[in-house]
Length: 167
Image 1 (cartoon, rainbow, N blue to C red):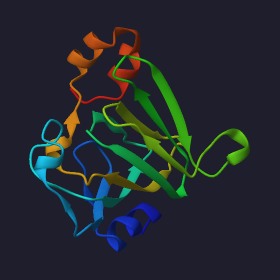
Image 2: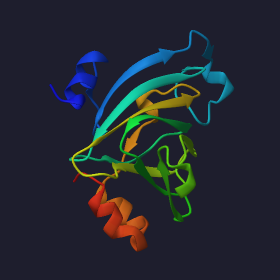
Image 3: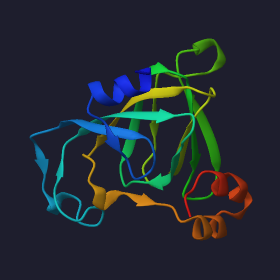
Image 4: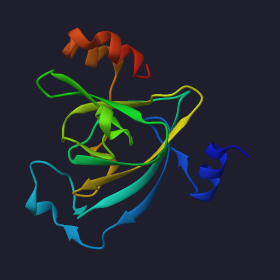
């Protein structure tokens, strides 16, 4: 059994709609009532959530956005690159990994409302990471990008968007 198969089995990971595999590992008992952020969230949100996330080099995490900040934590495997497009169309990227001398970070936070995608840096490899979201993640806050509309909105990034979206 490969390391990837062992991780999927050991942590009971399931396919994620954006690509890769995940399992929720934490959802706080505390809840923020909908009345606190009615203009941002539909319904109440837990204070915080956490997941394991496994991405392989033969896949990618497609461009998507959520309404909260999302912190990524590196565990093992290949470093991965997070590609981000701000709401104003500015592109940036960050490598999440352990080669600190070359600018990699073991933890990085993607700001809320940024479109972002991720890919494993080394061929024939994987990245095993964790993601923490606060207020807690809910699929009502998740928007998977459509290539055509995102490319129309951010045309200067259309090649990257085309490469890291599905349909």
